[in-house]
Amino acid sequence: MLPLLSQSTRRHLPSIGPYYRRSLFSLPTLPSIPGFESKRQNYHEEKIFHYNEKELYAIVADVASYPQFIPFCTGSRIASFALERAMQEKTEVDAELSVGFLSFKESYVSRVTYVPFKSVQAVASSSTPLFKTLSTTWSFQSTAPTSLTTSAGGYMSDAPGPTLVSFDLTYEFSNPLHAGVSSAFFGQISKLMIAAFADRCQSIYGPRT
Image 1 (cartoon, helix red, strand yellow):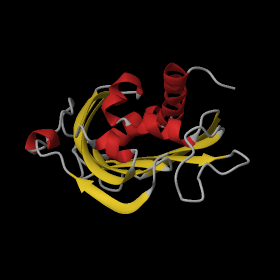
Image 2 (tube, rainbow, N blue to C red):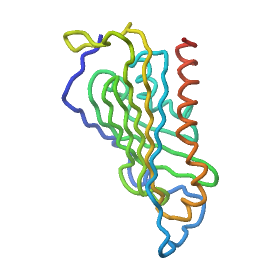
Image 3 (cartoon, helix red, strand yellow):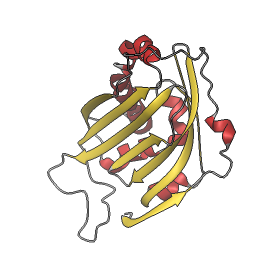
Image 4 (cartoon, rainbow, N blue to C red):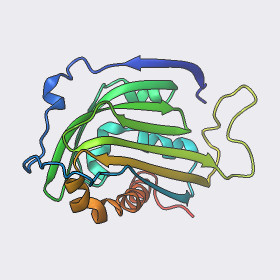
């Protein structure tokens, strides 16, 4: 049983410097076209999983393991204490993430906000040569007939599912030409994320119905 603490804990990766903000974008920078602007895009997916909130949250909270199952994530780096702390209290920590898709490659720093067993949000801390805006949010809501929390506010680790998992993706390319090239591809990302997450759940916890 783990208590939920209200105080947010902020931590930074001391080794993240200019290197991690350097673009690894492999195509030349494209000029903007007057009158043609890149628009912010929002995608939402949700699905019922037969696992409890704590189990599902633990998978998303493990940012260091993202390259093993998150589509197009080629690397991740986060403080070693992050996962343990995220399982105990609300926490904010910087993470360096690398992505690669089509001909694009990019590394950037995200601020990851953990709310134990409820949500994990990652927001790119500043604009990159590829993205003007990039954020993802995973949310978990129990659909079980009984509450997953005790009267003292702790968590019932043996509580059953199912749980409604919501995934939200918001992004805006820095250049509209990049947006045009990738629009159809990015429209499928949220579905791919949910599918990959389902596979990861089965791999870690086994199939459950």
